[in-house]
Image (tube, rainbow, N blue to C red):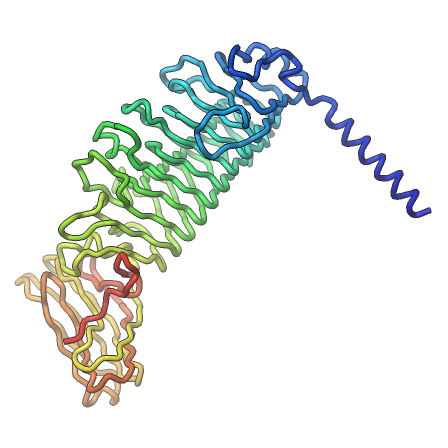
Length: 482
């Protein structure tokens, strides 16, 4: 009896599935050529209101935007830009100069999913353009590749909450147009759009947001120069751009090799990233201006806000061969537990490269060496300023350290013992290259730990956060025994 009942339920389930698929139309059965020999846009646009459309593997020539009324699905997403008949490819023959047309277009308040296919752009049209996004759009874009992009890969404009969820996307900029200023994803207005597992490669801007709140997870935004782009192209590259009122909350975000990794362009812009990854590499070619910065604020009076929690920022350069981005210092940002990797020398001239946020450094260094062991580096490059901190050794000896530079320009150092354990311990300072270095004497090579906790600092008169600083090889930067 139970077996019979299970069989009946299985048959009913199959019948329901078959019924649900009855309105899926195969575009090849409708007359569309999948060998790239003929334009399919008229056939698609004439049938999209009848139901969801299925594109079997093949190459589909598109000479006019596909104006969707229902979902479309292909049979093969590719992460490489090689057009072949083993995947579903929509190859654009659309003539557009300014991004006002898309290979795929839709809008309104109906859910129109786009899944498991690839778009090869032909001029400056968008890959997917959603220009009238409303409250009940509720669209999934999943496993979609967009290639040869010279305008926008994905463009969304409108209003409403949670209208677009886009995931498992690859967007490649063009290598054929050296003057192109491609944008991987641009969103204007809608709130709560979600982006997951997205790579935007070789574009001018990875992610550009205006108004609304967007969430992102596992995004690689690489703007390294591709092909024979003009040198000025590099100066315009951005990982993330936030316009007025735009909020971005993300995790595992990799704004890779950009002139400005994050650009806050207006009042009310807010960016919070958990686990950021940023690295300058050798992909930047034909560039003369290497003076970019990790964070750019368009209006210092309305800077917006950047919060980074965890991650890694690195640059492939040193004093003799500076990396493509020379400045990491972000005084207007809140930065916590972000590792900074570089081989720049610890000297005052490199404060912008060796410091990240304005947070008060609190770190511990450990030695097993005999002699004078360095426990703190204090930048003193400001004309006047001060900073204070507490130095505590693992045995309990503690001092209040004060560093002050007055109008005369001389840096003064005082160490006030905080307990009787300081008796017999020695401190000294050495000033070199705009950095005041603090040393503790270790009488033997037994293990020693020293914690430096900053209580006050001025901008450009501040301790170096040894806990966050590494060489490019990952080795600690604090070790110095004299």
